[in-house]
Every structure is written in structure tokens, then in C-alpha cells.
Length: 571
Image 1: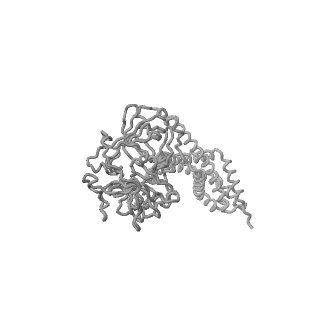
Image 2 (image 1 turned 60 degrees about the vertical axis):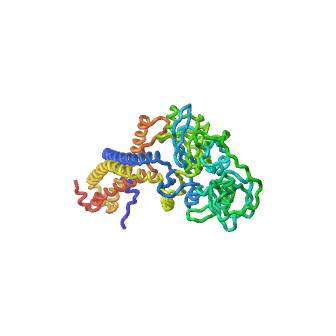
Image 3 (image 1 turned 90 degrees about the horizontal axis):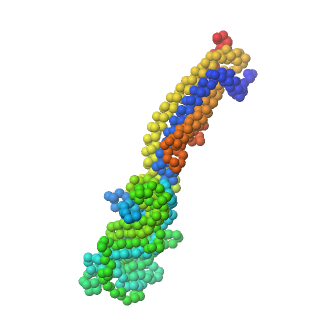
């Protein structure tokens, strides 16, 4: 029975042979390390630059976001109802709004036009705004009934028509009523048929208290939609009820459902015609209707401002900082500016339109990016003055893998979607070819190293031919002779690949250091030009050893086939 040589003994013999030819081994290991080092440096440089570009464009959090907008040609709009609907889509974590207006800011006696964005803290966080000084405001509130009720009106245009003087005026301060049985009444934002629909309501168990209001004309069987002509100098207006009632809404599938918030049905203030209600009792007598001619405004618009006790915090970008003539962002923090912008009658659903004014708004942060002047303000402020349609809604999904499924569902509703994932795909498409080019260059250096390996293994095989013949005579089997040569190649490639990886990483860090010293501005942090995953060095070592083992199969096969006598006679 033949005795087998243990694998560890063959490995020991291989490393003895490697050590015995020190100079040849040194040059082979050096060539292998150089080739592997160049390959590692170039490929990690490609990955590093790609990561650097992506990190400047998006963060890991924003990769899980979807931006939703409307196509102007489509009859779709983004409002509080669609915002709440998107929140309920399976897989959605958060749904945040963006309101866009053009405003004018006043600072140190000068005024500038700026893009004004109303949004929440969550939106700012998901948008990856990079603060260079200060902080974000922290509110996520959108609807603020208290703020809405405390807006101060400074003036109003004298209406052209007499009936406009009475539009929206109270004629009964207290009315007790209920909805007719089986009716679902439309709740409107102001007393007119063209007013936006806030939702629906229906009959309640007990009477509802409200006010009787003059508003737009509507048809009804009892002629409640046309007020007595004599009361208004032969002008016709309709009777409307203003009250706080439980809210039902129509979802995107057309079903009317109660709107539940915090475990109970939401209530809203709104207007609805008297044609679908039952008046049960009038609490007070008529309020006298008197023309008010003392609130005329030269701008012919309603000017609304925040109460003085409400503190407004805003963010500005670097472009605004330059308009102010400031170079240091910290010098502008806590400074106060005035903001004014105009909302058209279409935006506010108000006949006259509005000029909204914020005095002494406090600058709490400055963010980088954007060449045009921009400011950010809490969404609840713009929403409270009547800017109820959003220019964009940003969703955060729970899993990045769900993005395409959720986008497809939203696009089927007629909305347009985009995501930072699209940008990353474009970057990956560009860097795919960039990395391939770098890999080819690095692969060339590695190929030269493999040629050195082939040369070393072949020469070693020829030099040891007599020794191989003697080992065969002494009983070493063919497979063991072949393994001895393969192990020798693996040892050299293992040492060369480890040294090459270390050299490539060190060289990459050195290049990164030089770039940071000479090209990266101070305060921006250290920029790494290379990026290596934890498993990449292990993968390189395995691949290099495997290729070296394949290369050594040819001399190993020759060693297995040669006869012992022929090997002994070889000179």
C-alpha cells in the first residue's frame, strides 16, 4: 500500500522552494504586488469617485424618496387631501408638501425678489439641504387653525358692485340646524358655487350651531338661493350657513369616507347652502348691513400680516447672502427681514387676491447650493393665508425596493414622479464605462505580473526536473508532484496580492491627502478618493490565487507526465 504525503507537508516543501530562490522570488512577488496594486488603486479610485459624486447629489436617506408633481395639461392638483392619501399607500413612511411662491424681501433699505418655499422640517431633512451656518426650523405642522384665525387684515379694495359689499356678511349670528335626512352636503371654502370643496358632511344626532351668511346665488326649490331683492337694493345673493361640522372626503376611487385623525373624525369650518338643511331655530335677530368705506387700500388688494406675537423663522441660501453683501454666513444669523408676496385670486380663492406681509422674520440658517435667491418658511404660514395647492409632494418609502411599485401606482393616477434613484442610475451608467476603462488599464499591469509568474514557475519546474524524478522514484505520486508546483504558485501569488492590496490602498490614501491639501477648501472635511468594500481585498486575493493556480496547471501537468528515468537524466 502506497503512503500518501500530507497536504501540509507538500505546502511545507513548496515554501522551502520559494525561500531557496530568494532573488527570483523577490522579483516575482514584486511584479505581482505591482500589478495587483495598480489594479486595486485604479478600480477603488473609480468606486471612490462614483461614491463622491453620488454623495454630493443624494444621501442614503434621499435614495428612498419620490418627488410628485402635476402636469399642467392635466386636471390634477396636489392638496391636503392628496397629501393624506399618499400617506396611506402601503410602503410609504412620510408624505411632505412644498408650496412655491415668488416673494420680495426687504433688508437694510433694499428689496430683492426671491423664490419662497413653504415646507416642513421633514421635507428639509429629506431634501439634503446642506447648512453652512445656523439650524433648521423644527415645525412639521401644515394646518394651523389658530394662526388662520389671527391673521390681521390691513385693508381691502372697495368692490365695484354693491352686492360685493355684502358678500360673506353675517345676517344671523346664531342658527341651529341639521342636515336633511339622507343628504350629503358639500362643504365649501367660501360661500360661492365656484369655491373649492373642502369635503362633505351629513345629518348629526343633535342640532348644529352656525351662522347665516350672504353669498353667491344658487338655485333651489324654496328659492333660498336668492335673497330678497329689496334688502340689497335689487341685487340677488344667496343664503349660506357657516359652521363647524364633521368631515367626509372623497378618495381617489370616488368613495366618500369619514376623515379620521388621531382616532376621531376631523371637524372643519365651512360653508354650505340652505337648500339641503333644516333650520330649527334662529338664536339672534338680523345683523344690520352697513357699507364700510373706510378700509380702502391703494394697492387694491387685501394686505394680510402675521400677528406681532407670532415668531417667524426662515432659512436663506448663499445667493441671498450675496445680495445682502455678506461673506460670513454667521454674521447674518438672527437678523430680521421683512417679506412680502402677492397671492392671486386663483391661488387664494378670494375675489380680490392678497398681499401677504411678514415683518421681522428671523434668519435662523443659511444653506448652500442654488444660484437663484431662495428662502424657506414653515408651510403652516403660507397654508394659513390661503396657499392651499402644493407645487410638489415628497414621499419617503420604507424600502428602496418599493420605489418603482409605488411610483407606478402614483403615475397611474395622472401625477408625475421622479426620484434620486434616477440620478444614481445615470451616474452608474457613466461610471460603468469609466470603471471598465480603469479596470482594463489595471488589468494590463496585472497581466504583466502573471507573465512573470508563468516565467518563474516554468523555470522552477525545469530546474527541479531531476529532483522531481528522484521524488517519483522514492514513491511520490503524480498528483502530489502536481500539487507541489501549484502550491508554490499560490504562495507567491498570495504574498504578492497581499502586498499589492496594501500598496494600492496606501498609494490611494496618499493621493487623497495631496488632493485635500492642495485642492479641497478648509472646513469641507477630508475627501477620500478611493472606496474599498470590506470584502474586496478578500475577493482580490482569492481571484489572484485562483488564476495563479490555473497558470501553474500546465507545468504541473508536465511534471505529472514525465517519467522518473527521463527526469533523472535531464541536465
